Image 1: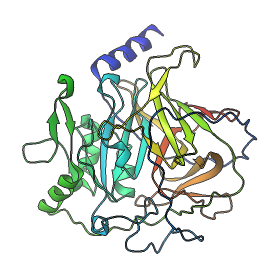
Image 2 (image 1 turned 135 degrees about the horizontal axis):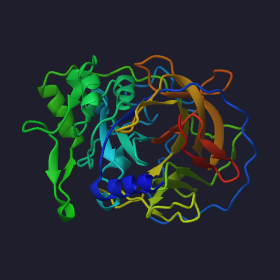
Image 3 (image 1 turned 180 degrees about the horizontal axis):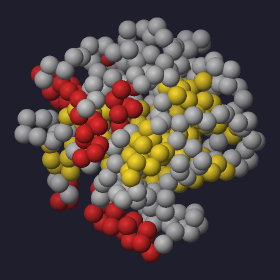
Image 4 (image 1 turned 30 degrees about the horizontal axis):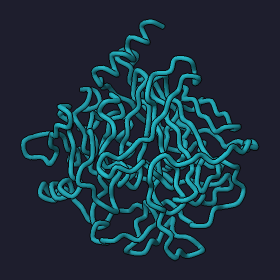
Length: 384
């Protein structure tokens, strides 16, 4: 145990990095009745979720109008942005003194997943809007190949372990990898002397064009959106996802904005939960608390690639169990990626599409055998 604590301490001090990735295939089980708990009070100002006139039949999973983002189901202010590849950007979660991150509130989708030694990392997907600053950017993991393939994306990252680099460079998308260099748009900024790596998404798209990376509108069909909440949900005014003693987060539903607001760990908690302390996670670029219309917990097989250093393959192809949170309700669902180049979608047990709420989605990727406590919607990450 002392060795594990030492590794966590080293991670928090140095912001260390090493790899992780890939898919899972569980079966949905009936959703137990949840105990309703009082709705929390929002702790940071959040703009209300857009409430445009929305077709009652919904949008997707195919035949999206030309001005509708297939990753959010919403019309975009500048439809020309959809005539490009999505941008996938690796963003760190530790060390804590590098928080708050830049630009996450402007992403269409964010995946959070376990990397190693108790930490997680984000891969944020930008498509329907740009962000002037996104970061801090950190290194890639095996998992990221799922995102690059599924969303036909350009990947911006800060190098990687040689074994991860070898796999990425050997992939069919190798020409869409962008790392720090004298001619790339990734740049350094120095808030409080931290020398962080960031990128402007518009500049990243322009760089891809200048390098001759094939662009144009990609096939991103698969997600289904409806404004009206589906029936069959259980009360879920909040949920907690605990990855380790160092990384845990809480999402609180804010009825005023119609979104889940993220709060993150302030200190390590070795008690299993009694010592958890949270604070709202802001976007440094906007000053607002991170707020997403959908939060989806994905149960995915984690295969050990290496124990020393710790490296994981996270198998995000096929299908598996999911629990989706929208409009203060929890729903049992199944996640699907039936081909390597498919966008992740949700379905009911009978195969019919489950509706995301129009807007942005945060995916929490946890191990296949992770513990679920439905009385308070607490998830404890366990592998494989």
